[in-house]
Image (cartoon, rainbow, N blue to C red):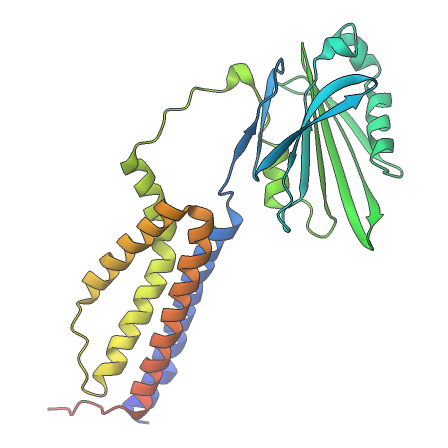
Length: 290
């Protein structure tokens, strides 16, 4: 068996397996993690929750009382998320009174959400008495999961609602939204990150896709060498230059946009490099042994 064929049989599977591992890591960093967070701020509310999407505010009336609702802006892929945190005194004389009626309140929320046979839970948490209601309903031919959470505080109560296709629930964004509730007194004052710290974060996020791109360039170089063609740029310099470029793209355009551009470009370069490498092994000249 010639060295060219042996190189294909041994080198190609190893390089492909390694590249797929790198690509899966970069895909996870780009899509699985939450890249956007927006706080929902209500006046006279003792809680704070974070949305993983952009939001919009609107006025609403509940039992004749005007309240503010913050909800997610539809982007075609995220679940519908809604938050409301009115003053408790507008509806109940005391927190104890609301706790006594809590089950019927949760059942009423479920009825308004058109949930048949809802699942109701009530428990004590560090934030206060917490209740949930959940169920599935049909909408547009799809099974839609409705999940609501209500937390009773001392001066206000926070109401959260998530609506998402059943086969996708709970998505990363649903989990993030439902589990980022904090008491305002527990929220530490966040120090603004320096430019160097932000660059470090963006550099770490682009490392895996840039390394995939580097593998493609390395394969391209060695493919050319089989045809006695020169690739003058040192590989170490190519890697550093690409990493800097990827970091700057992520820093300027944001993690969400860079998470689509950088992995896509890296995959394209890798595929081209792999093709040139295979062609070089098959048709290029093997160096003569001395």
